[in-house]
Length: 379
Image 1: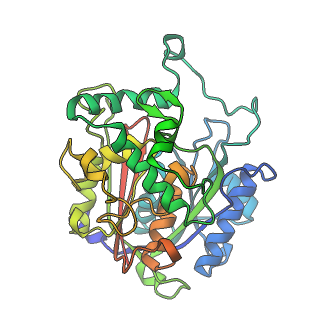
Image 2: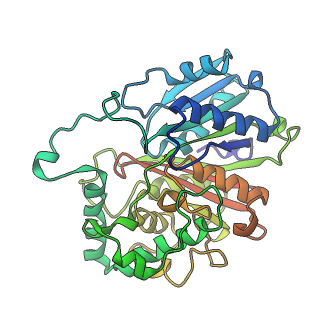
């Protein structure tokens, strides 16, 4: 990444809808609630938005989604884009927003994801086509990711206690978040007693299914200084893809986070030791562990011991997923991780605030651990 772009762009507004079970609202209702929240947060009007980037993850059922959103907002924009890179899309949207502004396409970009994953009725055109998998017993992303976790356990001796430490830490944070979907306290014993989904994953190793939406507004650092909130600057950005797939080489245990993170750290001019809080894409507990290794917070194979002893908890060496993450706050394809990082750097997180947080790393992981994007943000 071009180091000349460091700190040139900033996040100036974040917002979200209710998260969890929201059957009374449509997909667009959730999305528009998040947009209004982000506009109010930034002190902007909808007419100030001249670029929209949305996550077009709805399996082809909603084409040119950014246009349909703009139509519902009642605005014309100079730039619009609907993209999908799985769970890597949220961080990627912020990067594309910076690139679009740099290119002169627009000046203020709304990035959005939201849908009714929990209460959408079946048969409405959103179900994926299944081929070359279920008939052989390969049902869904959980089974796919379980292969990687099993390999990591075989190679490095990773244990269920270590995976459970991740789930327990994030639930502790969710208990301090009034917007979180899961707020009941959880112990390591509770983790072990939760039912198996696909070995080695218990139910509590797996992310939630949620109704919800979140929005982020990006503009130039120069303009950001005149807006309502203190700007959160984009120090570093990185992207990478293990495009040959999850089953190729060592891709199950070495994610595209390694190259993606290295690019972001080089651009930002910092190291893992400089990061005050991490907001990691946690579709499964194992992906958190592997991502922390690949980012360089510990060596490959040492992620298991690293996540134990409260290191990821508030007050620990690397407070991680401080809102509860997708394991406990809610699943909005990684957008809530950007929202939380922004609020942490503004000092707006109340009882879950990381004291004097100056820097944050945010990760996105998608396509069954093939696609990856990284943001490094600063106060």
